[in-house]
Image 1: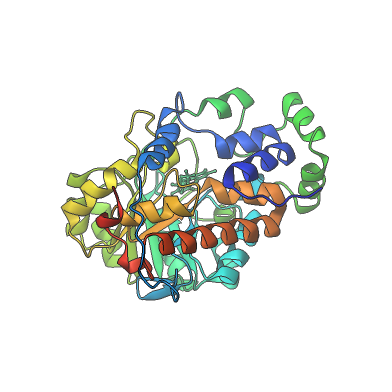
Image 2: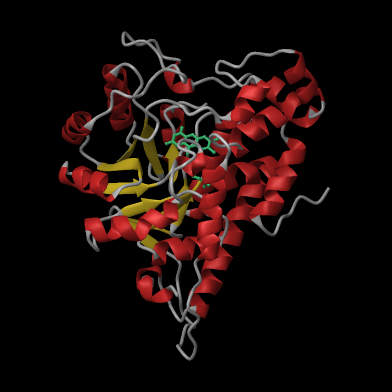
Length: 371
Ligand SMILES: Cc1cc2nc3c(=O)[nH]c(=O)nc-3n(C[C@H](O)[C@H](O)[C@H](O)COP(=O)(O)O)c2cc1C
């Protein structure tokens, strides 16, 4: 079967066929009535770009620099937990693709591959993402491990004080650690390729917690509400590298965070997976940009589904753009080849869009590109 796709929507449909429904819905689903996830996309779609002509755009580049590091493209892979449930070895495939294409990878606290293993593939490209569960000391221990493993960039995610109810997960009985019942068994039997590969590679675990710790372990359903500004300040003192605070949707919060000495704010509504009544993440970008000033780094995600979306976010105030689900759809559609397919589509769309806006580099994008 030909598994080449030409858009992220096509990749999603291919993944939907190959991945068991429980796992597909874990990735594709969102909080509540799933209004916020739809809004992320529709608000991005509403933004129009200003075409320009008669500018020599023969020599242009989509390479972009952030945090003193050069990337080949202005986007990266957002941190996602339990990726190996979507497809066996997904974390490894993502890390290898990040290296191949010169883009950053966010590695989740809840990854199914340990931060030490990913460091051996892609330490230079990987930004470690921290969740703080009930033990602040357990979080600090992870930070120390990340430091020892050679990571230079840390993302602290703060928009999950508690995991929001996601109805598709509830309906399918999706839980960690994974429990098998009759509905799941039938679902797997209908997806033999996924099931056989998973049988060979083993049931994915929260691999960062396989090592014994005196501070307990990570419970996905437990409160993560203890993170406050004091913890951010503590982290600032502990972490010598770049510190990004993820999941920020307000100008007031952004200013408080900037004052702690964090290096960047990551504007995101978690891809609509947390507060269903939240505004579209892209609607907050210009407001937060205005609050933090023109040079402060802003990372952005939530709802981007193509190269023009990346350009729109950059022109709306983002310094760098991340995408989440699209990478999982691409793996589900066609494994490592699917990832190359996706990154090539995004790269070529960015390149052509730059030309149509009369721009030769990402740093030339600003609000003047918007209508
Ligand atoms: C399956 C899945 C797992 C996720 N896990 C995490 C996580 O562990 N840590 C985190 O900070 N964000 C997590 N996110 C949120 C993403 O980092 C990102 O904010 C979101 O996917 C962006 O929206 P998009 O999917 O529309 O691109 C997850 C998202 C998905 C789809």
